[in-house]
Length: 303
Image 1 (tube, rainbow, N blue to C red):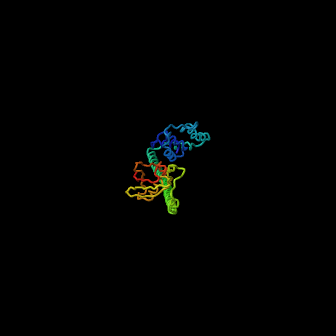
Image 2 (image 1 turned 60 degrees about the horizontal axis):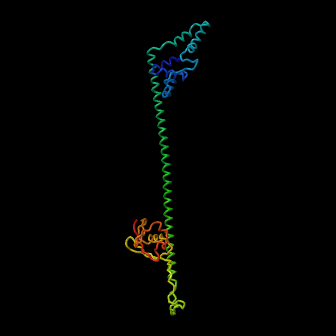
């Protein structure tokens, strides 16, 4: 089929001239099927409807193609042939009848439908493959997120476990300290003998150097312990002794360990007379500095 016949067939099928000329030129005029394949593959190109500009010296349907087809006829005439080649050329250029054109158009339309069906099937398979890839990537992403969440939960659980362990150890240390303090106080007050009465058995004689018989004023006694009574939320009381230099926080810990206060419930300590509520800063101060020596009464209140 000649180049002009392929172009005319595409035009008869309803293709625009610019598209048809490009298809014939781009496929090298290899046939109507190749031209249709090229048109379907490039139908979405942005420049598909622009006029086709052939290269210099290669004009579609121009004088070069005509001279090429006419050259054998001229050579055959010069050699004195019988004109059979001219007859064949004329028969090849003979226009198609309406019935032949209709049959060719039907065949080409059927071919186009087959090509379009193949293309739709190929696009459907490609879309299915892309959907599979998207699902696979989504599953992988979900697995990564789940693993990160599990790792985060493990870290939080480990952190909470360590905090509980440290709190338990701290409570144990406080208990041990309170037990040691009790033992020291028991040894101190229980091991010493009664005060000696030898000096008291002798009569008291006034000092000759003191004309009035009165000695110097007595010095203020220094207490190294404080007896603290704590009134709890339910009205009951607990009493124990602390060293004068111990901080008020020791009393707070003692209340936590020996009262029926629910674990985790925060409370405050206050002196009823005069009324004074102790702050977090007071917890670090020694009992002596807070005026709770040699004895004091404290009240537990809810925060």
